[in-house]
Length: 287
Image (cartoon, rainbow, N blue to C red; front, side):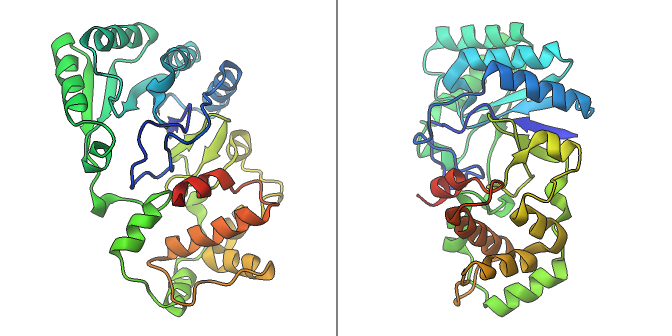
């Protein structure tokens, strides 16, 4: 089981590639201590022994971040690393203090984002300087550099795909969707995420959210029609569901099956009645 915990969506950056559509305009909310406890208990019950912490930018609430690390440790869940864009590492004294406090809380490695997308919002000398400080004090780290050919085009990255990939006719998209069939990966426990509300986010398919315990128990109770359509029939079933409600696909087509799926889900999220589609995510993805 490979899991990331996202204690917030708010971020100091609004990267064009962001899978989770994080930015400074999200509400300044952070995972509560009660939700931390519930998430850790559910993950432990499911057999999860380690997680990483991402976001959003988890360092926006450093005290909350330390509480989350300690809660994981209390439940026997190891935190492999914490992701950060290093916006906070502009004072050496504070940087060293944060690293020492994190080490005491129970995590000894950072994943430092360092690429052209983040450089638009965070001066490159900050992640470089953080890496140097980590080396100096013996704190583990690795640099994460996003490359366009490795992106999953969901979240805000759908705009990047639209800019760089030619649209395919809708008929071709539909034929490809039929070949792919059902989206069984939606319940995968390989690199899924849990957000600050304790909701499960499928790997790669952002904008879909379900209560974590329902995924662990493999029981959606039939009350999530968009999710059930994708899980049982793929894009073809989702399109049929959306068309029943008045959706008309773009006659010019889409860059990919996933792009068509994303835009269909976005439209459905705006109609209401789909608890499994996070409307805020789609708003932030295309703002």
